[in-house]
Length: 325
Image 1 (cartoon, rainbow, N blue to C red):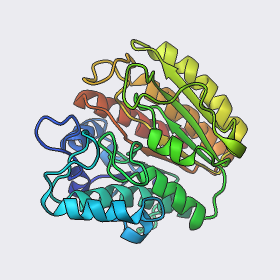
Image 2: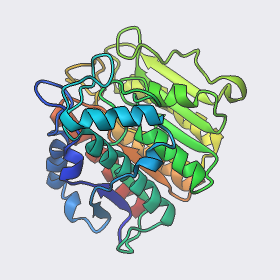
Image 3: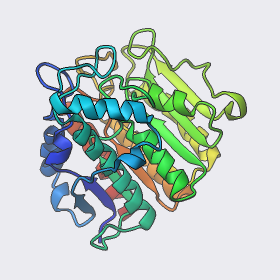
C-alpha cells in the first residue's frame, strides 16, 4: 500500500540553467541521492512516478497566449532572456517547463483520485522541481518560466470544482507570482514566510499585504530578518497554522523551497531541515483534518545541494510517517 507519490525522472532534470546559474539541472539528483540514502525509494509507502507533460491549452488557463508563444520560440535556439535578467532561455526550455507543470498537475490528479494509474493508493504527492512561484501570467521571473502553482489552482477550480485552497510558501523568496495573481481571490488562502524583501528578491511580501477587495484578510505575509533561525521560523509558522486551520481548506499546496537553510549561497536565513519537518507535520495534520488528506508539496528554490536533499526528504518522511500513525 502506498500513500505518497514522488515524481522523479530525467524529464524533470532538464529544467535547469547552464553555466554558473544557481538553478542547475543537478538539483533533482541531489534530492534523489539523499532520498535513496533514506531508503524511501524502496518504501512501500512511496510510489515513484514518471514525469508528466502538460498540454499547452491547460497552461493557457493561467498564462497569456502571447507569453507562451514567446517561450516556444525562445525554446528553439535559446540564448535570449525570458525576463529582465534572471531567467535565460535554453534549447528545449518550453518542453522542460511543460514537464514541471505536468508533473504538478499529475500530483493534483492522483491526490484527487486517491490513486495513481497503477491503482496504488495516493493521498499526498511531491514534485521536487515544482513550485515555480515567481512566474507571472505574462512573463518569467526569478528562474521560473511557467507557474505550475497557478496552473494547478486553475485546474483544481475548473476540473474539480475545489473552492477553498490553501497555499503555503516557506521559500526564502516571497511567492510574488502566486500572491499578486490571486491577491483579490477570496477563496485562495496564502501563508507566506520569507526573508524580508528589504534584503532579497523580489522585494515584496510586506506584512501589510493581506489581500485586496473581497479577499482582504485571506493572505498572510510574514517577512523574517536575515539570520532568522528555526525558532523564529516556528514562531512564525504557528501563526500560519492557525490561519490555515481557520480557513478550512479543501486542498493544500505547500511550496517548500530549501533556500532558507543555513549555507544557501543567495539568501541569509539560518534554518535547519527541522523547519521543513515542522511545516510538513503541521500541514499534514491539517490536510487530514480538513481535506481528506489532500496535500501536494513542491520543491521550489534551494541552491545548496546538501540542503535540498535534507529538507525535501524531511517533507516526504513527514507525509509517510503521518500516514503510518
